[in-house]
Image (tube, rainbow, N blue to C red; front, top):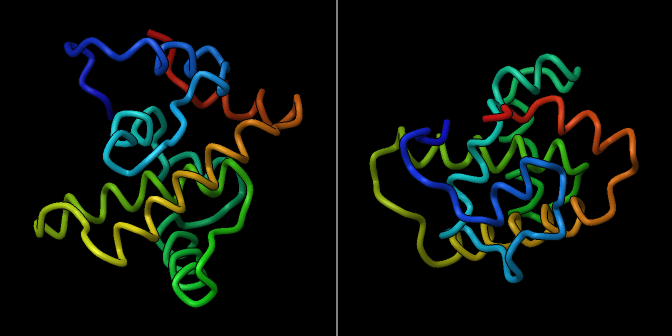
Amino acid sequence: MTDPSRSLPDWLRLVRAGQFNAMPDPFTWDISHDFAHLINGYTLSQQTGLGRLGLLANACFDDAQETGHWSGTALELWCCLFFEHRRYRHMGEGEPTGSDLDLLNRLCTRLRLELQTLTDEERQTLLIALPQR
């Protein structure tokens, strides 16, 4: 999760309030860490019926590697972004590079796009998951 002692950028405060149009464009991996951790993807994927996050994220990643693009709902993609940040932290191999970084940047781009077109119901589901500090 994000460090509460650290000041968040203005756009993240706006996102927490449901103003997803405040997300930077381009939205890339290198600026996505705090955003990804606004949610707890492990818990959220279970609570919303997506199942175990590792299975979902690995399937989405494999599909994206094969097709060259990410697909899914905003919720699924946000959970995947959360998982990918956790994966890199636990792998201990630093930040992604090359084709891996390109694929993760495409995840960020797709997620931003999906968040711009949420239905009211989807927005409400996501807002409930965001901690209000």
